[in-house]
Image (cartoon, rainbow, N blue to C red; front, side, top):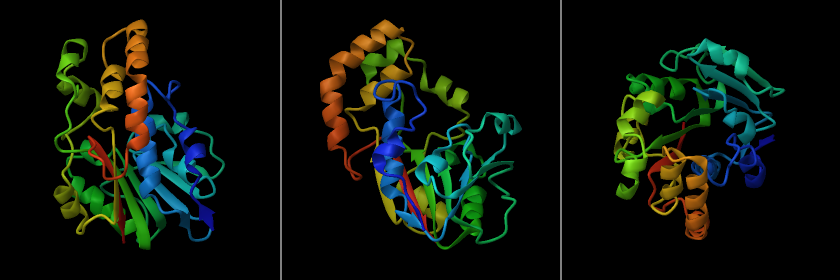
Length: 246
C-alpha cells in the first residue's frame, strides 16, 4: 500500500527557494492539496499528474507510487525531476491517451483555468480514474484578483498581465461551476491564501526589488505567521483544492 507523504516532508519539497516568503503561497497550496488527498493508495498506486510541468507535485505527494506526468509542452520532457518511478508523456488533457479506469488518482493542479474546453478535461480525468479513485484539483476562486490589497497596485503588474503570462483563459471557478464540471459536489475541499497571507502573495509578484520585499516580509511576518497557522480548510481563501471520488 502506498501512503501519502507526511505533511512536513511534502512541504519541504516546495520548489521555491524562499518557501516562507516568496514561495509562501505555494506552501499554502501544497498544504491544501495534502489536506484533501487520500491518505493511502491501493497497492503501490498509480497517479496521473495532468499539466504537471516541472514541479513533480504528485511524486512528492505519493513518493512510493508510480507517477505519470502528462503535459502538452514537449519541451518539459527534458526538465522533469528525476523521480525513480516517474515517466513523462506529451499529451492533451482533453484527450488522455489512457484506457478507462487506469489510475488511482488523477491530479489537475492549477490546470483547468488554462483550458478552454475544461468540461472535456474534467470528463477525461473522471474516465481514466478507477472506481473508488480520486480526481484532485486546485484552482483560483472565481473572484480571485491581484493584487489583493489596493495599496499594492502601484507596485504590482496588472492582473491581466499576469493572467496572460500564466496562460489563463478564465479567472477561476465557483464551487457550483466545478460541481457542474464533475457532475457532483466535491468530497473534500480546502482553501488557501487567506486575507492575511495574501499580502505575501502580493509582494511576491510585485515589481519591488529584493530589499523592499525583504523589508515588507519582515514587517508583516508576525501577523502572516498567525494567519498561516490558524488557516483551516473552511477559512475564507482566494484559491481552493478539491477532491472528487469516482
